[in-house]
Image: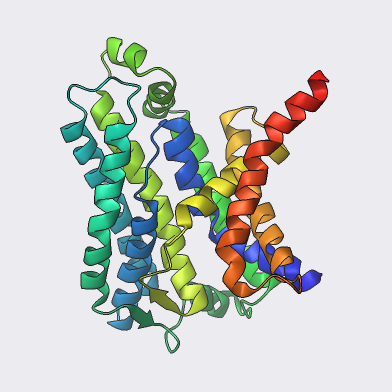
Length: 300
């Protein structure tokens, strides 16, 4: 059981940045962004190829985050191009913008990586460097503690940003775009910035996962959006939604709960590793249905 918890916490914290990125687009911006699958691989691929070429792993991870943010900017620009003549509630241009970007990113990621898989088995990860600095072997719970510190730092920065004037405008944009536009806010710029932040967070997950598992692969982003939604929904259902600070904590904790459930599910004898995507879909479906079932039980 301890092994399952360690795996769940480790994977949950690694993917917590992905979950935060998905939360940012779906909940804060009200923008169903499908760029996630591509920006995750872009972050992983850019980090991996730079590390294998002798660049500092910290700088390489930062470049990967910037590359993911650029993917978000492209999605925002395509949305602006497509949305003319559409109503504010029309999700068509938003969906198409994400689809076009993530489709293009498949080829771009192959260009960046040079091949479909970039191994990092003989390269020191960020966690190894931190472990050498503090004389600790970064495995199991020590790695979990290190990831927890990084996750909390990112959360604190997001807490601060979302309570600035720009962050409040971003939250208002997702709630009522017409109102925030009437106040003189440039909604296009705010949305593009939000998409850049979200996909930068997703790319951070890609870079960290590549270092943790020892390779970057062109297919590692498949299903990333569903997994991110799973963390967001489970976090909201289990831990509730209060202030924005609490919601950020909820979705990060939801990422951990989701990964623990996946780890437990894969230990069941009749579930094969190839059933992972099916298990993911079932968990997300249960999380989506839980509020409806709960409300019906309360009413009855």
